[in-house]
Image (tube, rainbow, N blue to C red; front, side, top):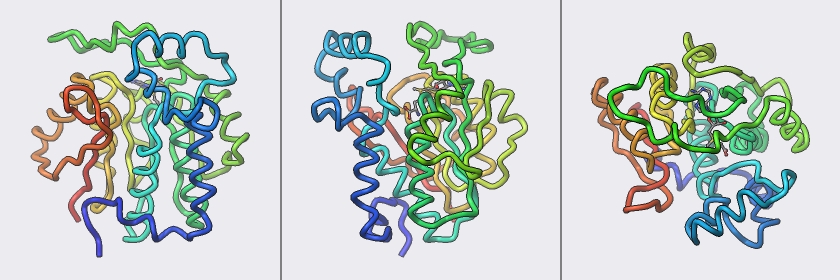
Length: 266
Ligand SMILES: C[S@@+](CC[C@H](N)C(=O)[O-])C[C@H]1O[C@@H](n2cnc3c(N)ncnc32)[C@H](O)[C@@H]1O
């Protein structure tokens, strides 16, 4: 039976895949190497100083391949299993990939499911979050971030290859979303993950990608805890009369979940 919440779909994966996917998640997040922390963001919840120490003193090789919490990777997995199980057509995309870890996990899930007719798309400037250009009514606090979360396309390709995941089902879209996703080159989509942080980035990505999501597909919004991102999503939902229930995931500050998603009505 299908439900809006995909979290009960995991048992549909072949049982022998579990140790591989768990180990992959632990490697991508650096859980294996960072003393049992789930994610780099766990350091932020301890204290600002711990986070700064982590962020600026860690050597390049030890920087995680994804910022995501393991439960967020699990949510990606659940959504993909759900659309494959329910025959919802379409590719999978992450808009905002940084070092590529979440997208590697997407490709790995397709691989263990034996899916060969869906692509994973990676859309990013591969030069970091661009500053706002057209958003003038309120400042976007993301513009003040020192770290623009930049990783080059060569670096991401190399990381994909190191995990054995670089193949013809992986597609790179390099440039700002306002250009690479306009018009949207992907065709039908079943799972869309937005992780561009900023207001404009989130707005540009949802405007381009949402119309491609097939009924029964999912949209995942990583930066729900950021006011500017949340605002872009809520404005889009209001403009298009979208009423599907938003599900929050991973505790954030002030009781606002870090991530949110919903399933498009079938
Ligand atoms: C926080 S990081 C993404 C983290 C990543 N999903 C992970 O698994 O760790 C944000 C990414 O979004 C990209 N980005 C933000 N706004 C963008 C835009 N308007 N166009 C293209 N890329 C953008 C940045 O270059 C950066 O790689």
